[in-house]
Length: 338
Ligand SMILES: C[S@@+](CC[C@H](N)C(=O)[O-])C[C@H]1O[C@@H](n2cnc3c(N)ncnc32)[C@H](O)[C@@H]1O
Image 1 (cartoon, rainbow, N blue to C red):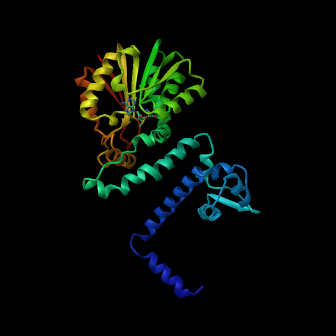
Image 2: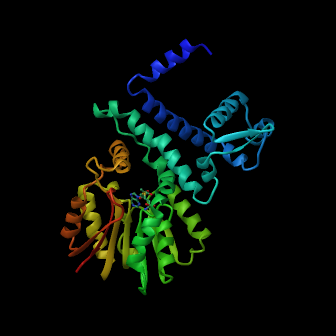
Image 3: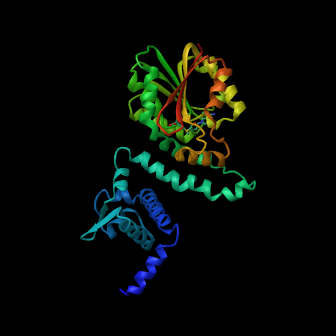
């Protein structure tokens, strides 16, 4: 190789900012590869090492050149390897997608490549008054899968609320995947209750999960808008709002929490867990706030005080704040009437 070319390449690399941008770019390409390899079924097909012809058949490929391009990115990013003509999974991210937490990891990547990316791509139009996105109902299923990321934290939080109590009737509003109900049951075998969600696909997901976990006789999964349902469900020992309150604007939060107070037994607990506005201190939360500010049906993340003051106004005299992680504004709130 001509030394002059190497020197000119090194000169390119001296362009301020280029090296860190190229590093980020590689991560970006890898994430896009995993997105496509997961959605196209390539990762699943490669749970058995396969040659090109086997993949064309298995994935019903009509444009082999696109598959070839994807396989090449897989090799170049070291997510895949090729031995004796057989492709297989090599990278730890792609391997993890095929393991027990894989669905949540896949949802994280799918969310980033789709609606998170859209939030940024549309900023210029939207800050000048362009329409906000109207696809909240199309991403509910994905959001519910992605939200399972905080399961271990939520498990501890819910356990501290339900442990050792009998009876323990729970209402989980915006139940998503239903994972919170499972966590409650894991901590207290007396737990029964209802999970409700406004999104039909999410309700289907939760129903399937609850049945797979063998909990259909403990928890009912309902389709509905909590704003239009109250008395008919009876009263509860615990009502949980996990990653929910930013679906309601200020006034709606007040009327929701007022109604929920009436559905709680006098000794009952209202438990909130969610990300709050990070004021520039937490990148993951700031990123979530971009989505929240970009889609119809969501609000920018509230501050912790916004929610505690609504709880006080609604008659919750005792409010405990649980700080989950240093440096993060993902908090839990436990509110009781006295
Ligand atoms: C961000 S997801 C959280 C899901 C689940 N709580 C979790 O964190 O894993 C919020 C859920 O609330 C549901 N939701 C929003 N507004 C609702 C309403 N008015 N009544 C019932 N569910 C609602 C959405 O459909 C969505 O599934």
